[in-house]
Image (tube, rainbow over all chains, first blue to last red):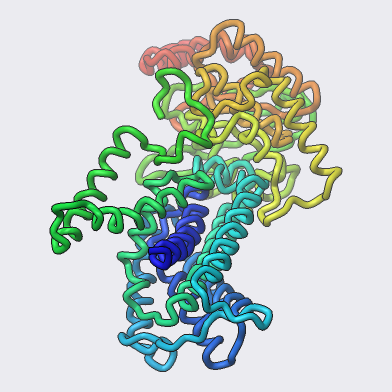
Length: 299
Length: 266
């Protein structure tokens, strides 16, 4: 039982990293990227490659993953962010589909459909993280660090510029904001930090394949952010916990045939989304951090 | 009537020379020459669709003219992206305000003082202090100190209008292009608004208003340009323009009368 809880906690902390970094562009900058799973994958494959081929430790492998993630995101951001909203969604969808093909076909690096196995355990400063409890400490530390970085960013002038662009891009231009550079920087930062989640994931499971980095993952991450509350620091964490605990929770319900859990899960997601739209459009955590709206004011 | 032969006010800060812009088959702005001088309020008057907002968009780089030239202090700004034009000190407000709706009043004002695109602002602590002081002074000048922590979207109508003014003020622009800033304001708000403009012109700001309420126009303008169908029909001091029967006829919608009146005058 204890091992099960620790395992779940590690997976939650890794997914929370992905959701928090997605929220940085989705919630604060209004950039709807459905390629976030791609950067998760790039982080995982790059870290694995560097660790297995070069024998690098966790920090170096993760740094390599972040660098490659940042570079690829730059390739997406520079052309795509010159156009507005919906075109970025289309461009990120295209890149996500393309990435799945590359992950599947570039066998010498990604191992193809079968993926990569026997990834060595994470080594930090000579210490091998093999026990799940120790890994939980590592992944939670990464999560906390990333939340602190994002907190500092959104409270800075850069964060205000992002929110200004999200709220009105035309006015942001008219007040001297170089919107293209600001958005590109945001996407690059978000992708680099997301890659940390990928690196953790690879070292934790010691096995990765393309299944974890598909469009479904991107959509699920978006659901985590929206259910938890966009543009809030802890909303995405709350959303991650909820979505990852739901299947686990359902399996404890009596009289529920295990074969039906999958479809019931889908119903539960759908219901949760609809109820949120009606009662809490700002997300579950949305009311905590936003200034209170006036009596009767539309949210 | 030759435009801008007589000149009041200081030096020309912003000048459009012979600019034209066509949308499809419609000449929205048709060979307009128009100057904004330091220290005075110039008002653009004219019926809806006369090309007033398009002229603003041409002068701020939101639109590129098909022909003609836009000069800032005598230098062409046509090839600059519009965020760079904004940094020259050309500020504008929008008819639909375009506030940063989900940010607080204070953040709305603070963010326009921050021009750096990277993760930090240049200038260090002294520049930071200067920005803070600017924000405080702006909130005080626009009467928004008590509302500083409210989101822009939660403000009352007049407060939103003043927040829109606060952004221009805080941005430190010395050319203000204001698109119907006084519409819907009650008398006391309008007086406060007029006071803001007077303080600005006293500092040498060139103000350009688009305004439909002729009481406001008469009250505030030092100079009026009358636009119709993309052209400047007349430019001059408020008395002359506002009393011109031909212009009044166009403004109030009867072009035939206007033609007749002009013919009689001729």
